[in-house]
Length: 155
Image (tube, rainbow, N blue to C red):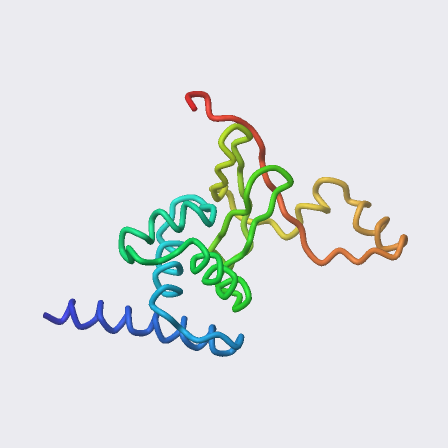
């Protein structure tokens, strides 16, 4: 019985954190936003809004695609998710808040977390002079992203 109480307490803490973050950004918590957030946190890769809609609809059959888009907008606005836009294909959504890298299948558009540690010194390792050169041009580097592109052999 103690385990159940701890699990409930952890769930309540997650819901309270979700509520607080949404309210700080001017949004209120709804069961639809909570369901979208729960799905994003459990997703193995970074889904599109339509993929979120199809998954969350199993739990909330009356949810609309427009509501999923609004929920994703609220989560991004509250800093609880990131929108990963790409020139080709729909945007995808990521619930991880730590700095990390991605890999993308160019055939399917699937985006997943790269199982490699984030290296804040990566730009200096690529070219020790690049950051300084950019600074001299008036450009201040505040961060970096890395996305490996390729294809799954069997997809």
